[in-house]
Every structure is written in structure tokens, then in C-alpha cells.
Image (cartoon, rainbow, N blue to C red; front, side, top):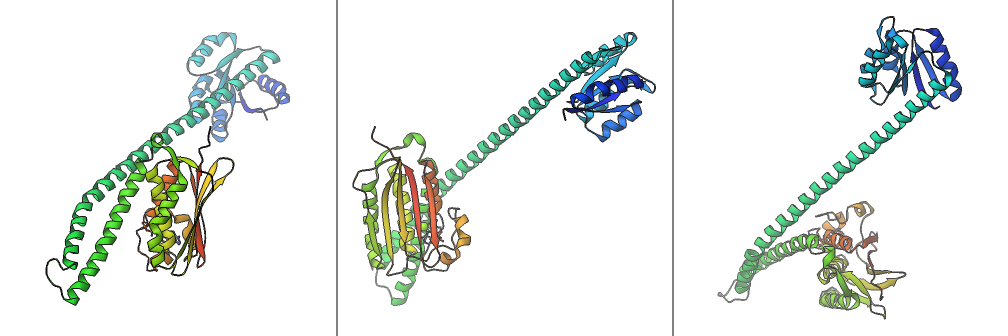
Length: 382
Ligand code: ATP
Ligand code: MG
């Protein structure tokens, strides 16, 4: 179907003639003998093009232009005019009609006017569609800008609050140490026990403050221009070393496998350290005594590297998987375990990995263990 056309004319010859010419061309043609009938049909059906006689028994055809336009401004109106009514046709054009043809007209003249009108309608619809897309894109860009502004504000706010909390909490920690070490006089068993508990609480608070600072930093420190080539093997070796005491303490065997060749990734050292610390800390934290943790670095052809941290720990319930990396999210089995945490580590990892143009992949089986893989682009020697 090429389009829907309404012919509004009181002369039956014109109506039939239009149908005879246009229908074989693939148009669906309907007719109206009066303005009243035309008004009704326009309300009921969305026509692409309307052929409109200016002089109708119940009024002037051009008075139909406003309702046509109200129904769909892209509907094309072509005026049919006799010689005596040419002035009215001119007025119709001023009021938004697209074209006019004067009676008597030939089949070719009619067809040409209609085809041109349809072409105009398609172009207008296309323009309208593009305009809508452009507006939508503009609105999206605005929303994105607003979200970025809010997120930046949040980071800055978090950073300031956490930073301001750090020194009083650090101060309280060292005052407490002078007490627990007996530097301010002897303490009873009971007093020592209470102070130990306060110390644990303060350590937790300091860990939270540090996490918040890392999170805020992870959003700002990894701007693209700060990335530089980092030798990742050495960095992993140091990270694993930092956790050996903790692992031994929990009787967890900690293994590290590195490739022979040196591998460079575009990153920041601070960011990579945070990724490694968080993944390793989780692996050890969520693995019960006697378990194992493997850290592996692998070059994935053609130009990627994968850092994987695998453990034989408590695993992650299937229902928790979609929420990992949300700020403050902790799975139920973690909350029920003795492992302390705030649920910020993975969101820090996610942020940093994304800013290094990498991706994070998590697989896990509850009760058996988890594997965290960070895939990063590799800098190949040029
Ligand atoms: P913190 O902010 O101190 O790191 P956290 O370790 O609880 O606290 P994330 O590191 O963000 O927080 O981890 C989020 C959640 O993902 C954890 O609470 C836990 O439910 C789950 N999770 C992460 N790593 C592991 C793992 N290796 N084994 C099992 N569950 C894990
Ligand atoms: Mg953690």
C-alpha cells in the first residue's frame, strides 16, 4: 500500500476519476461528498493525503485545513480548484495546503501532484523522526551529565567526610594503645577485655574509613591521562607477599603463578594495588582455615591479560551474583560468617577495572569456592 488518500469533492465525476487513476497505482482511496462527512472520516482514520475541493455545498474546503492539521500536521492537503476559485486556492496555500490542481486536470497531472505530495509527507515524517531522535539524545546527554555531576559530588562528599574522620579515629586508636600497653597505669582483667573490644570496633571503623577513601579515590584517580605502563608481575608478587602472614595465620595455602615474560598493562599502580588487595583480602577472608587460594597471571592472546584469584571458600549464592559490586552489598552467607566487611571492596574493584578499560568476571559455587577474573588490555611492545 502506497498510502491512504481521502478525496473530498461534491462532484461524483471527480471522486470516481480520482479513484480510477490512483487505485491502480497502489493507493487506498476513500471519498467524502460533504465537509461534514470529511470531518468525520478525518477523525476516524489517519490519512496521508487529502484532495480537497474548495467549494463544497456545506462550506469552504479550506476550513477543513485546521482540523486536518490538528489531527496530524504532516498530512498533505492538495486543493482542487476551479478557475473561478483560484484566489481561494492561494489563500489555502497560505494556510498550510501543500499544492493545488485546477479543474479540469488530466490523470497525469493528478498523479504527479499526489506522488509529489506523498514524497513531501515521507520527507516530513523522516525529518520529524530524526528530530525526535535528536531530542532524545539531547535529553539523554543531559541526564548523563547530571548523573555524573551527582556522582562526582557524592565522591567528593564521601572523600571529605572520610578524610575528616580519619584523624580523630586514628587519635583514639593511639590513645587506646597507650592504655592497653599499660603506659598509663595497670589495668584490671575486666578493663583490658573492654579495651580490647573497643580496639576491634575502632579497627573496623578505620577499615571502613579507608574503604570510603579508596572508593572516592577510585572514581577520580584513574582518569585516562594518568594511565601508564605498569609491570604487573612484580606488583602481584608484592601483593601476595603482603597477605602471606594473614594466610599462614589462617592456615590457607597461597599460590602464585606468573608467566615468564614481563607483561605491561596501561594502568595506575595505585589502582592495580587496590584491585589486588581487595580480591586477595576477600579470597582469604571468605575461605575457612585449611583452604587454598590461587593467584594467577596469564597473557591471553592476542592482547589481553587476566589476573585470576581463585579460592576454596564459602562461595557466593546464585541470587547474590547480580548484586556483587553494588556499594555496601554483602551476600547473606558473608553476613552470617565471622568475616567482617562493609561491602565496598568489589565496587572499588569494579570502578577501577572499568577505568582501565577492563572487565571483571565472577564465577562461584556456594560452599565450594569462587573465582574472580580481571581482564585488562595488554600493552604490546611496538
Ligand atoms: P569490604 O568493603 O571490607 O571489602 P566485603 O568484603 O564484604 O567488605 P566486598 O569486597 O565488596 O565487600 O564483597 C562484597 C560481597 O561479595 C561480600 O560481602 C561477599 O558476600 C561476596 N564476596 C566477595 N568475595 C568473595 C569471595 N572470595 N568468596 C565469597 N564471597 C565473596
Ligand atoms: Mg572485601
